[in-house]
Length: 344
Ligand code: SAM
Ligand code: SF4
Ligand code: FES
Image (cartoon, rainbow, N blue to C red; front, side):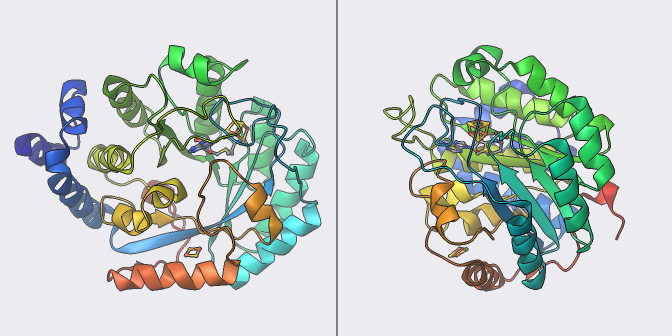
């Protein structure tokens, strides 16, 4: 097993069987994490990039079976921010020193392409890198956002297994998800994707396929989250993913895609109170602190136990800075593009 890790550390390539072997053996977790940490340091350095996350609407027309924002969930009070409110939060985020903003929401038809373009143009005046995470759109819409100035797009594939994908996403298809990711690549976005770990019926072989898919499309950013069951969804009674397996998946991704951006995700910290720091020491180099304010934070309820629910953006900025400095790493002062996109 140690030879497989050593090989991946040097060659950044693994077979499906090797990935499965690494995923199923908890005994080598520390060796795997140490190898991922070394590759992270060699290729992307010790700096940690912070992305300020604005959750601007929890209205969603989809019904992904794992997600608390699914349109069919009637137990959630819905909100959407007006463009001016979003811009106000964006200005504050710039004031806190964030160099990248992530605008995330459910798939909310209220935000038409012209509305999004206006928001994007105004945010770009703040000299920030801008990531969108607003779901599946048409090619034309993706083109319009890019023209308006959006730099990056986050759209997790969630799972590359078409049966499981269909099961988890009523009325959606893996084909359209792939079309979206392909469009985003061709349009010149830095493309972020990723998967959920621990979906009901998911096997280690499927996770190995996910990892090989990320490598095949040469994704620029990969976010991995354990699936956390939400009581207001059809998957309420499921077991959910574990922190340990999500960490293993993340570490393997760093070994095979050495120069990409990998966030230590909020969902990882939900399952382990030191989850983001452990993530940063197991291959990750990005954290996405929340800059959403007030009641909205609580209403963006994807899964229970989400961290920072009662905290302010200013508090989170200080908190995460302290934690990162506490492990001898620094907050980056650049926008943190993947190196091949670097304009800095
Ligand atoms: N609507 C957009 C989309 O689906 O791409 C962006 C927002 S969506 C809430 C962001 C991510 O939340 C999804 O890609 C999914 O992986 C994650 N998510 C949703 N429900 C979750 C759950 N119960 N546990 C962990 N992650 C979850
Ligand atoms: Fe909507 Fe995204 Fe949640 Fe699916 S994962 S229900 S698209 S917010
Ligand atoms: Fe929000 Fe620590 S990052 S309280």
